[in-house]
Image 1: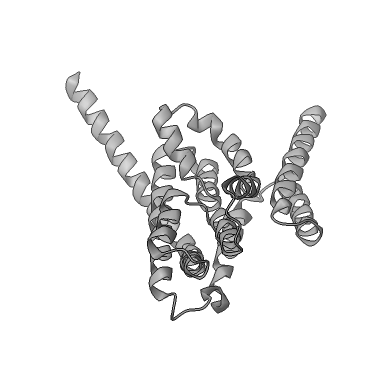
Image 2: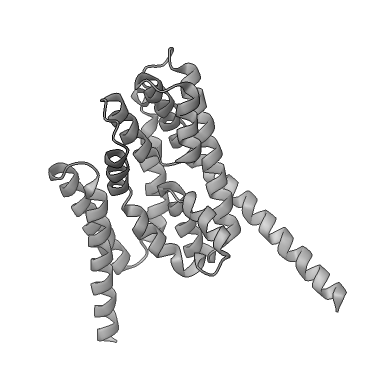
Length: 244
């Protein structure tokens, strides 16, 4: 009996290790889009008057690209009120509530410390890869952990690279490498559009995102598009169930 349990434990360990390595492998294409933003973050931190250590520590302790860019802009503009910066970055990251709610049925089964660690590392890229894995094979905490650790490390080191190269590179996003990020998200999205509801939700959210980007300030278009997609998906699925 003990031998069977031991073999089962070894098999689970191999599966978990394989899942971690798959997460690292799946994260590699995303890194080509993350690195230019991390370098830019490092450069912007120095430009705003932060030291190299402060800039890198922000990436290590905050780990939220959009929020960091906005906070650095506000510090550079002389806004020192911490509550103004906190409130502004909170509004920018409201989309994390939706991402967290989407993963909650899976993550809530994990120990509380694990939930906290995964919540800290949840960003757009890690959510997209984790959601794609759920659709493909089901949820794996090891997969999400592998993705988030990989992205965390590359973000911190690319920010450090930005502080080192700050005097030599004015803006790495001018190279056009920032397009790697939306291109990667499109690659993850397209295989998911396999039915009528998915296609309609994608079109509706895209329309709201474009209109919001044109007519709304800041990043509100992201929240509006997410809410529109959620409502549309709910109505469409309810309609299909009613027809059955």
